[in-house]
Structure formats: C-alpha cells, structure tokens
Image (cartoon, rainbow, N blue to C red; front, side):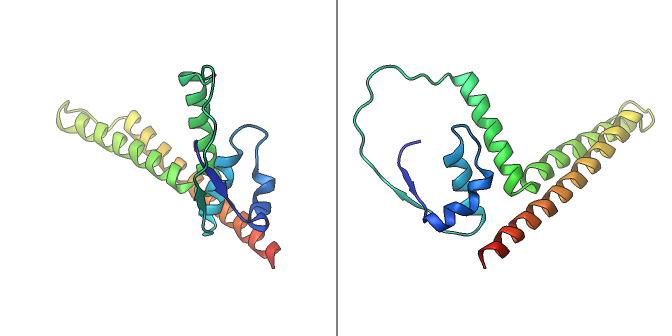
Length: 145
C-alpha cells in the first residue's frame, strides 16, 4: 500500500497484543482502529522511485494476503465471514433438496440434510465467535478506563 497511516499512539497501543510478526501489522492496526470506531487519517507521502523489480509474487503473496484479511476479519467481525458462508451452504442444501424432490422425483436426501445441518453449525460457530470478539473488545475498552 502507499501512503502513511497516522494513528495516535495511545490508540495504537490497544492493538499491540493483536499484531502478528509478519508484514500484516498495518492492516491489523487499520482494521482494529476502524472496528473500534476511532478515526483514521491517511497522510499522502512522497517517496523516491523504486529501483529494481518487485519481489511480490501474485499467487503466493496474494493468497497469503487474502488469508491475513480473512483472519483479521474473523478476529474483529466474525459474522461478516461466517454468515455469508452459512447462507450459501444453506441455500445450496435447500436448492439441491428442492431440485431432487421436484425434478428427479426423489426423496429429500442425506446430502441436503447434511448441507443444511452444516450451515447451522457454521452459523452457530459464527455466533460464538462474535460473542468472543465482543467480550475481547469490551475487555480492552475497560482497560482504557
């Protein structure tokens, strides 16, 4: 990313325990600040032109960055990840079951039941994760006082 993220020191300190040892710390702090309702200021900076070739590999670094974003999203707002996954699996199970009943004149099979059950389990895991995230957030808020 280009630019400089300016965050007050006392606010950034709240997120020190969440920071990884890898290159994703700017993303982690940014999402933590935004999730906590603080304002974030992007300050444009000028840099010297880079000499040489980029060492970033699209597939390897892109997939790693996607996993980092997924981890951070589940850390701060789990239902934004679990709810769509659960809904897609649920709709797939219901759709497959209806297709089988209406067009193949079969019974509502175990595959549909398994998909629907799996979607409910994923949704419940999302609810528990959301509660844990909220407790962690409330705990960090109480430390401020």
